[in-house]
Amino acid sequence: RSPQVKAFVTQDIPLYHNLEMKHLPGADPELVLLSHRYEELERIPLSDMTREEINQLVQELGFYRKETPDAPVPEEFQFAPAKPLPTLLPPQAPTADGKTPPKRDKEEHPDL
Image (tube, rainbow, N blue to C red; front, side, top):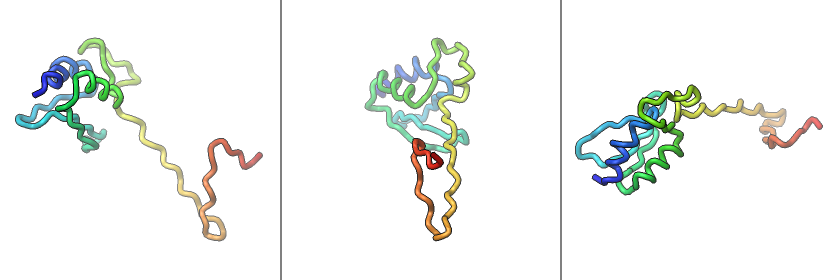
């Protein structure tokens, strides 16, 4: 195992909220991202990354890093790195001729 990955696992993981380590003997180290329903979203191999690169990646993914393992997590980060679900736009109703009206930019004001 890479000493960089081992240092991340032993020293950095305890500082991240909602980041867990699962040891699988013989498996290459990878970051497995799960949905709130624990469905696998993505696997990112860590073997060739430095400790600094892994920390940067985890923070870019939205994981909250505490000052110490026992530090409280601010309320706004309790569910981090979860992102709000995208709001789906209602489907456009077809016009009388059966065509969907063109989408407008947010900047356009058709009523002006």
